Image 1 (tube, helix red, strand yellow):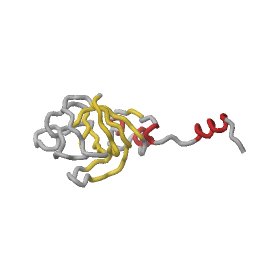
Image 2 (cartoon, helix red, strand yellow):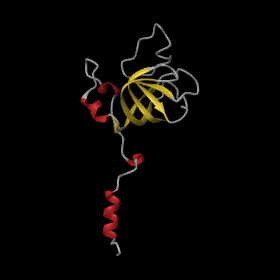
Image 3 (cartoon, helix red, strand yellow):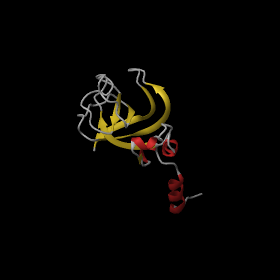
Image 4 (cartoon, helix red, strand yellow):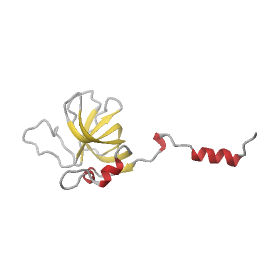
Amino acid sequence: MSLSRRAVLLAALAAPLPARLIAAEGFRVRDLWEKDMRFSPLAERLNGARVEASGFMAPPLKAQSTFFVLTNRPMSVCPFCETEAEWPDDIIAVHARRVVDVIPYNVKIIVSGRLELGASTEAETGFVSRARIVEAAARRA
């Protein structure tokens, strides 16, 4: 039995795309939350999906980490290390696939990965998050 080119093409188009070829959906971190800090319908829809978010890398909590915090605005100090610092409004935990190359705090970056919702404690630092981007990679915008 021989397959026609059309049958092969249709079979290829019907096959699921590898995850790396599926386009990530962009979002703003603040849009993940309702005013009462419940997850928004957008957050619920994106939970488990590949996403992209832009912002700034907060100074890492420790060297050689696979974890950092994406902030909406540049922060020259660790937002969790200074008792007088104002807690940022728009942050999300980012868990990278490998040790993070630190990008200067004032350089805009784009993070891509999978959105994960629900309370979780980061093992290395004890940082608690309700939302995070996992299996992430960061690049300069």
